Length: 279
Figure 1 (cartoon, rainbow, N blue to C red):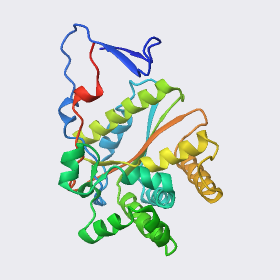
Figure 2: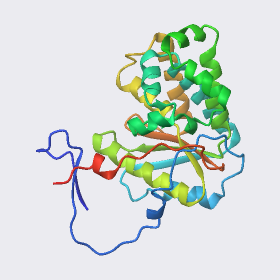
Figure 3: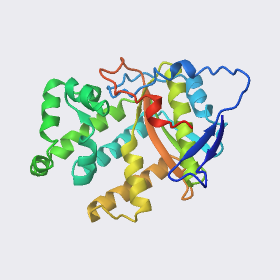
Figure 4: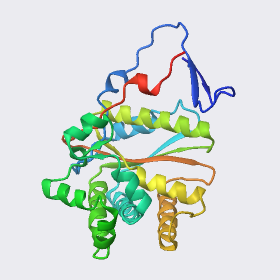
């Protein structure tokens, strides 16, 4: 595969890939492509062996500029859990973020079959009572009223509990922050996720912290209230204390790993024909 990123004569194209004849090359990660998935369960507090942590930290070394940083001590993981909790409080008190989240939730099998996309509510690992409560706060008006009684704090506490149960929490960064760096950061993320799957680890991307702090940094706080801006500034400052982040870095994704039973539900995957155009 010969890949050209952002071809000049390709409007809105991210990449053009030309397939040429080559020798057969087996990848030990290939068989895990259909197996890797998001697991939102509370993990077992079981340490990850050092050789597995080292394997994951080194698995993306051949991707230029990519760094995989891991922490596994309980004190630091608890500190990151507090950051995840603060992030979710913002999400559940911000109209656009709330709308962006709930438009992808699929509450029934009929909705899944009709849309063929989205996130099944079963994948959120909520019990029946929690599912009913979550459906209730899918209304922004209802949530605004309930937030006066601290509902956003109650909802965000689940993020704290989930993150706190992790055996390892990682952050992927790139040396630069160009569009191509973000693509390569995604490649590194896929490599990490597949490697974790190959070693029997439960895995969950924790995108909220990175997405919100990146939006905050790039947009100068636009779109957030002064209070939310202060919170996001504190969250990013804490991330920089925990992980080696420079101003020039693209911060790609935060993730948690550990050991757990398989997830109760999985999102559908789009067929290749929907995401790749052939010529």
